Length: 335
Ligand SMILES: NC(=O)c1ccc[n+]([C@@H]2O[C@H](COP(=O)([O-])OP(=O)(O)OC[C@H]3O[C@@H](n4cnc5c(N)ncnc54)[C@H](OP(=O)(O)O)[C@@H]3O)[C@@H](O)[C@H]2O)c1
Image 1 (cartoon, rainbow, N blue to C red):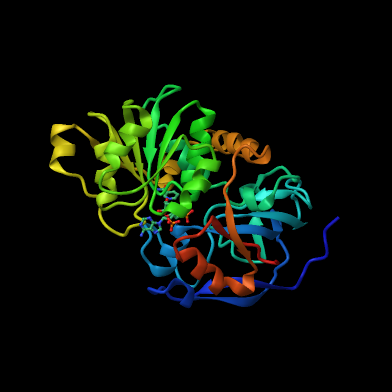
Image 2: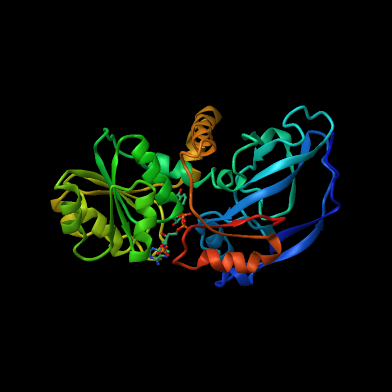
């Protein structure tokens, strides 16, 4: 039986993009539609604010939705009504929302076929962060062949991707050197299972050598850019690979001739959105299934700095855009 359907909802809408992301978005009312045939009405339970969401508001991301738009790329919800002909998902089922569906909203009407059922008992806040950062972390670790016992190095290690990467690496028997930009981030990364945590700086390569006992490090994972990319390159063994997947520092990746030419370091990029286009649904669903099982079992998680209701969307976006957080900012629309 359907749960009583609300007639009015709230959503985080924007009609323009601009340099201060919280200034362009606001919580607006909308009429909650009844689901048509083949559709379901979903109450959104949780939806994170990722750096890509902030860059979408400022207009700096690699793909931008047409305006006006509803913020939020990923999240989870609970089905509260089904349209004619829908046999699954059932009312009450927790579901993964399709990426790009404007998830900072109390309610969404979606095609039933686009929803992936999730375990009802698992923490919806943790599940809401499933679709982007955990697969990114997992695929980054597949960038070069690695054997148990091998070392990898990453920067922005206290980011959500960084934390997932620490946990997934440990589950594979890999060892991680984790680079952060402030002392106060060290303990949190260590608590996730990091083997070494170092604060970024000019002598990074020397300190990596000391932390690993001089072991070969073949893979560097870079979310910062600028000279931080070069510092990872200097910490790699000759012939190593740096994968850049983010630009948190706002500068183009730097790589010295010494790294590129004399030490044979390769620099490549990774974008999950492009990966999704290169694989079939079966490959994508198998990856999600593996990650859902780990999250539901509590073996993979991301620290949460704070949750915000939809009416505090401006404060939430401002908090997400600020550095120095202890974890993710998550929108709990009805919270
Ligand atoms: N390529 C892809 O497919 C893909 C997929 C997912 C994510 N990403 C990217 O991955 C990165 C991390 O995403 P996330 O959701 O894990 O981030 P997050 O949890 O929001 O964490 C942001 C991280 O960036 C650091 N940071 C912020 N400003 C910085 C600066 N100016 N210089 C250096 N570090 C800075 C923060 O350090 P403090 O805590 O010290 O502020 C923190 O470690 C982002 O760039 C995101 O766009 C890319």
